[in-house]
Image 1 (cartoon, rainbow, N blue to C red):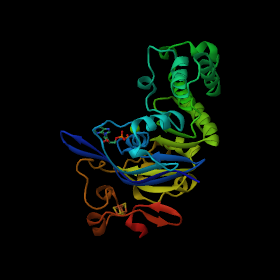
Image 2 (cartoon, rainbow, N blue to C red):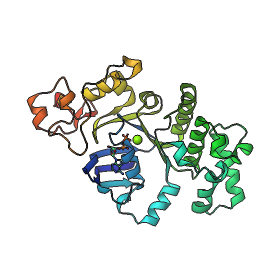
Image 3 (tube, protein in one colour):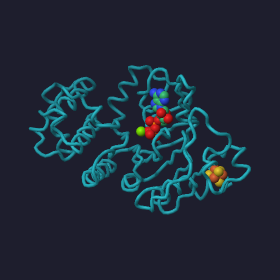
Image 4 (cartoon, rainbow, N blue to C red):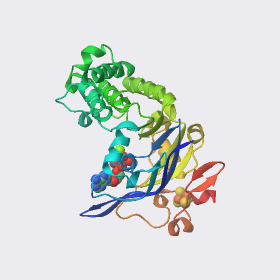
Length: 310
Ligand SMILES: Nc1ncnc2c1ncn2[C@@H]1O[C@H](COP(=O)(O)OP(=O)(O)O)[C@@H](O)[C@H]1O
Ligand code: SF4
Ligand SMILES: [Mg+2]
C-alpha cells in the first residue's frame, strides 16, 4: 500500500544571488512499511526534500508539485491540519541534535510537551510516556535522565532523545535527517541498530550522506544529485551494482571503497547546466548528454536518469 506519493516536486529559494533550485521535478513513492533512504553529497537537496514533506520550509520558499499522504494533499492543507498531521502521523527527527533540543528545558519535558499539546494527555501521564520512550531508545536510568538538560547528555544520547521525540506521538511515518551525523563509530553503530528496530515497525524516510546507514537500515534507496533524483533501486541492488555514473563515483569516493573523489564539483543550483547535470564530471559523457536532459528511465525494475540505459 502506498503511503506517500511525491510528484513533480520542485522547491526554489529566491536569494540575492538568484533562484536556488534545491529540488527539481522530483517523483517518489513510499509504501507502507518501507524504509526509504535518500543519499547524496552535502548540498544536493536532501534536507529540503524532508522539510518540504513536513511543510517546515521557510515562507519565502517556492514549492510546486504534489505531496499526497494517505489521500491528503499536504501542500494545500491549511496550517492547522498540517500541524495535526505533523503531530500525529508524521514524526520528524531533525538534523543536528544541538540546535533541535531546547537547552533550557528538561529532556523529559521536551518529549512530553507535544503529547500534552497534540494529544491532550495530562502532564503526569505524558511524563510517564516520555520515560517509557527514553527506555525504548535505550537510555539507561530513564527516570533520572528525563529530569536532566541537553548539556548533561552526550552526542549519542542527544540523538536518542531526538529519536524518542520523533516516536512520541506514535506516528506511522518517520523522517530522520542525518540521524548519525557527528557521532563516533561505536555510537553510530548503536543508533543504526535502534533505527533498524524502528524500521521494523514503521515506515521511514532516512536522509543521509552516510552510505553505511542507508545500507544497514533501508529497503530502497534514492540517490540525489544537484537537486534531482538520479537513481532509485532496492538497497541490496544499488550497493552491489550502482547503475548511474554518479552513484558509482559517489560510492567510490568513500573511504571504505578507495577514497577516489569524483573529478570537478557539483554544479551551482542557481546556474544548472543544460543536458545531464552530471555531464561535466562523467567519463561516459556524449554529445547528447551535453544537450539533452535525461529523463528517469526504467531499467530491470530499477530507475536511472542516464542515457546509457536508454
Ligand atoms: N533557506 C534557504 N535559502 C536558500 N538556499 C537554501 C535554503 N535552504 C537550503 N538551501 C540550499 O539548497 C540546497 C540544498 O540544501 P540541503 O537540502 O540542505 O542539502 P543537503 O543535501 O546537504 O541536505 C543547498 O544549496 C542549500 O544551500
Ligand atoms: S546521461 Fe550521459 S553524462 Fe549523464 S550520467 Fe549518463 S552518460 Fe554520464
Ligand atoms: Mg542535509
